Picture (cartoon, rainbow, N blue to C red):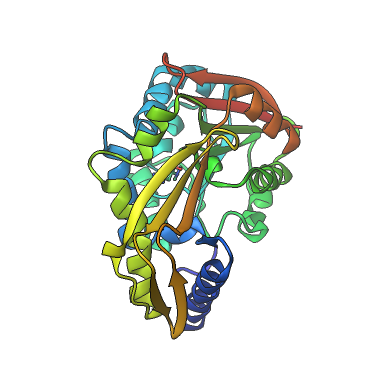
Length: 322
Ligand code: AVI
């Protein structure tokens, strides 16, 4: 398995990549920051809080679809499957599914945090001592973290990708990610994936601009992170959180809006903001069932079936690699 903790040169490389991405993003005509940087320790905790707020329906709706259809889902997957979870985090979502499967061959979680994986592995082993767990530390969008899969036994491999994380990828990147999944599966192997469905913009916008202001703190934390890690002097009170649904692009966009003309220093580089100018921090794409089926097909999968909640807010899809 991969090395457990990141070494000093690795950390320096991550820092300089962060600086490069921030200067590049803020130096463009339209300012942007990659959404992956929202998830430092504080940001990850804030995201967990978002999942609990009542306006953010995604997490609890997905959980209820799983709870209602667990047996059906397990039957679709079939016996002796190896489950692979890219971006597994605390592996919480998969536990019930693993317990429901017939003679599972094991679990292959992939995550950038070795500590999180270790804790998750311990918990799974405590609850299901027979379960084989092979953890892979790394970025799941990189082909090398998938390498060890070829040596593992299974009748069928199934990639488990819940949480509507696919929505945070631009459609062309989402297609590439599905292609990467498919490249690590054989024909007939499975993909179980959660997506948020297109719906009325009021409900969508409320989910990303919640009344408890947790998403606002999550978004603004990115500026805090840049201040702390890259010696910048963002004044958080000069930015407002904005989230809106873009009907044409079928995505919720998250921005930080400058409230007045001012300048910020980022590691010695001056960045000018005019009043109303925004930093675009995240996209969350919403799919209809047919749009997502088309994306699956472009990514190398045959859509088999899907499960929805009664209000058709959210879907869990099962597809097979071609
Ligand atoms: C992680 N991801 C699926 C969340 C979403 O809904 O796009 C991230 C998020 N951003 C703001 N709220 C939640």
